[in-house]
Length: 86
Image (tube, helix red, strand yellow):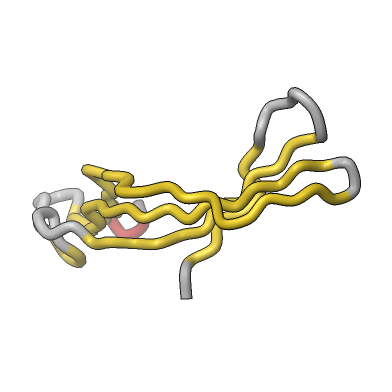
């Protein structure tokens, strides 16, 4: 909320999630998945509600790679990294 502005992320729609790699290393399981999604990403003026950047009606698409990790065995997964597709 810098300078009386708010960045809004809305209507997030995950279009697909696909595993891209999985491995074990130093007693840990890793899995990376490719996420394809779209969302509304825009900035508004807090006082007026006016859209200053982005669009509140045209979704943007994005592709990211999420890597999850857990100790080997029946343990909970934790998000380890998120990388933007190049």
